[in-house]
Amino acid sequence: SQTIHQWPATLVQPVGSPLSLECTVEGTSNPNLYWYRQAAGRGLQLLFYSVGIGQISSEVPQNLSASRPQDRQFILSSKKLLLSDSGFYLCAWSVLFVTGELFFGEGSRLTVL
Amino acid sequence: TQLLEQSPQFLSIQEGENLTVYCNSSSVFSSLQWYRQEPGEGPVLLVTVVTGGEVKKLKRLTFQFGDARKDSSLHITAAQPGDTGLYLCAGPLNNNAGNMLTFGGGTRLMVKP
Image (cartoon, rainbow over all chains, first blue to last red; front, side, top):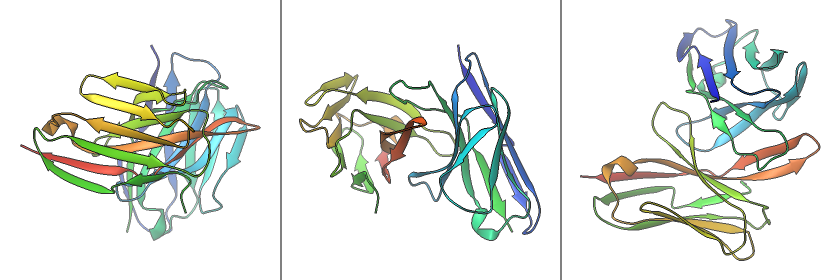
């Protein structure tokens, strides 16, 4: 069966510090991978998506970047965090070109102070 | 302005009551999905509806897809405290990269014992 894990679960970082959130998927090959951000328990905002190794598309210009160094690994990064980067970050995967159902990781709560 | 509008945004009811939440759009979707998210966790897929007029039942939950495929509803019968959570609807935006989901703003449901 397929599983997805992301870490760390909770992170408190000072403004201006770097960020690295990691996500891995097991049990499937060549998945679509996504990073979403969720503010205050509301809807999800798509940040980045990837359809293959090294292929990253950004939906929202911002202080963050994403990379996909391996087929089932997706990383969200920042060189210098802003207060506005605080939020709940979710990694997800889906099967390419099917109905698009997403399977989410456990989420990472980022607080920038 | 979100492509998918959910209502109500918040709903607090007593155990045993029935409720309906709505997901509306001016756009036609090939399918719509419903997710439930508990605090501090990632959303979990409940159901996908794909045919206009379709009704799907999942125990006490009934999902309906509008005839024109622009709206969906979720009806819960005899709500229980375990139904508490954030309910999100989502629909695919097909593009050159495959399937990406756009999410509604969510309905936060609290069922009091």
